Every structure is written in structure tokens, then in C-alpha cells.
Length: 340
Length: 54
Image (cartoon, rainbow over the protein chains, first blue to last red):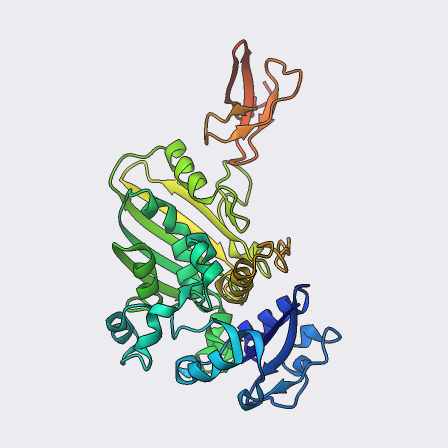
């Protein structure tokens, strides 16, 4: 058994991670922390886990050593305490944004201030397994990707890898759980219910990750929609050559052949022709579809995930499996619900 | 196995294929028809046409 603890387990991503690790089979959850709920049972915050665990939240100061320490902390906390965390966990998997970028200048540009530990930026491996597993196998420090970035990168990666993309404009529609479990004026029910709100037309932080992963001329906008879980990234890709359907299929198949969590969804008939995040709740799948524009050198790529799973906790467990030579799907077999 | 003429995916063919037999591509979901047996040729099956009662 691999001993694991979760720092910051009272949020939505931490709760999903706890759910996955409790059912994993090769992981033993030693400790979960929450400063706000210290001393309380996990089910107090995550009622779906009633009867699944008797763990209580402890504080960060109470953490003891473990094989793998997962971090699901508010932005800035990981980098502030990273030396302590590295002493406690042989390996650290950070679900937060602190160590996703390697370039300190990009970090400053997108996060509004200098990185507190620029010396460590190059030490973290980006957590999307589909981009490369070799580095993950050897990694002691992993930075999981942002949810919107994950959806966009997995949708676009095959086209950039094939060298056919000139530029891309990404529009993501996101559910309310992306904003976390702390209420704000914007999450107040009369304000959030039925929302279709452009909340970040430009300058979204995840754009920095997307550009770092793919390179090139890429733009990004985000819209909140009426949904609790899920991200749908619609990516308008301007390509540098004529590509017919078969060529696109070849590009996507060659990138994702054998990938356990990426499914190509492009059906000619029926009501589920393209990726739909509504079908992915609780699953670690990323569904990717595409359609070429017959009137322009444009390919529209659609990519859907559950933001708390493939966009956070599921991605972290997938990385954990890769790092330990376990079957990559261990603990992640749930296929989602239909109807949902 | 044969190749889907729409997406290039592998299409499973029965042991005793029959001309006119309808198949479905598991990858892109298109409905296919066996147009010929020697060599085995697949094409998109025509959509069901409405005869308007005539």
C-alpha cells in the first residue's frame, strides 16, 4: 500500500480526490487536512462519503510523513510551504496553480506578481499524462493542469503535434464548481442560476499553461453556464493546409491510440454526435470531437471533461498511477451516468 | 476487418458478408452498406427515404 495524505481536503477537488483514493485499492489515505474543519469527520463536508471513511480533518501543522502528499490548497499556499511539504511527502502532487508554469516571467504576467519560489518552477512535471509519461514516472513533484487548460490542451494537442495548426481561439463553457466551495456574490443562487456570463473574455490564467504546452498563437475566453460540473472547450483552429475528414481522423487517432481516457466522439447521427460534459460527471474521460469547416481553413474542435475529475482529482490519480507503475485506470473506471 | 470509407476506422465484417448488408462503424457511427464482395467494398448507406405514401 502507498500511504497518501491530502492537504486541503475540504474543497471540491479535495473531496473528489478523497473519494477516488478511498476506493483506489493501492492507496491508503492517512490524513486529510482542513484548517476550517479540523477535528470534524470528512462526511461533514463531503456527505457522499458517509459510511466510507471515519477520517477526520486535521490541520496542516499535524501532517506526518507519507509516501505521496496531494496538495489541494488555495493559490499561493503550496509555494509558501513547499519545503515543509517536500519533507513530509516523498512525492508531491499539487492540484493547484502554483507550479504549473516553468517561466517566471509568464507567471508574473498572468498571476500579477513574482513567483515566491522561482527556483522550483523547473522541478515540477506537468500532470497531463497524455502529453508524456516518461517524465511522470520519474517525477517527485507534479503540478496538475488547470481544468480549462486540460480540456483545451487535449482537444488541440493532436493538431499542434502534427504541425497543422496556425492559430486557435478557444471558448470554454464552465460549470459553477470551478469557482470552488466558498460562496461569493457571483455564486449567490439568484445571480448564478441560469447564468450565461462572460467572466474572462481575455487574460485567463489558464491561457499561460495552454501556450506553454502547445506553443503558438492561441487565444482564450471563458463563459459561466448553468451547470455544476463540466467544461466544454470549443476551439476554432485555423489550419495551414487542406484537411479532409479522414486526415483529421488519422491525426487524432495517431495521437490518442491506446489512451485510456481520451475518446474520439464524432458521430454522423444520433443526439450525442459531439462531446458533452453532461455525460462525463464523475468520470475521468476527456471526450474530443472535431468538424472541419468546408468554407474555410478552420477546424472546430470540441473537448469535454468533468472539471473536478480529468480537470483535477482524476488527473492527479492518473498521474499517481503512472508514477507508481500501476494500471493507469486504477480507481478511475467509473464511466459517468446516462441519463445524468 | 475493412476500412470505413468515412473515417478510416476498422469496420468488423461478418464471416459471411452479403451484398446489401448494412453495418455500422463503431468509431464514427456512420451506417455503411456492403456494395460489393469481390473485392469487398463499403459505401455509405443511403438515408431512409420517405415515400410519402405513394
